[in-house]
Image (cartoon, rainbow, N blue to C red; front, top):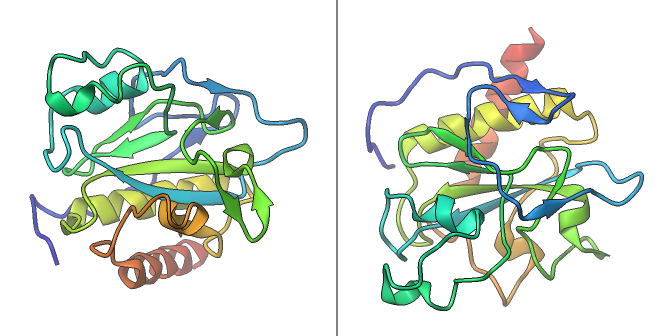
Length: 202
């Protein structure tokens, strides 16, 4: 279990249903999104992992990638990513702070070629949350706490979502993607989320 930084007590998060914005997040809105297909609702939560440069944490580069402003000359690994039109709805940094790039009701471009239980094009009906991390590096206590709080807020705002529909990027794009990787503790997430939901129901 990782212990980077102090573990913060879970705090209720609130999403404005009209705007799809999370008040507690730092807003860095991406141009890389569009509207969901008519009648499509967010039903699936897809957990990703990202680090830029690979294996390094902190810095402005994830923001720059998702806003289309990543400079090719800042790191050798960036050249292949320049010009990519990708985004996620939110990023949870190592300290548990949340950055939002796309309103939750809109379609972020995070899953790519994907399918969930035979249903293709997961971007149409999912919300993508990135964890600042790497497949083999333990995620922090603060990240689990923030992910549980964000998931609970999403379930409250969008009744079409539930704890039964949370997957990794590797689950919807097997063979193409590996994140969030073996370091991610799915059992821990589900236990924390079940406890959170039970506490809210009391």
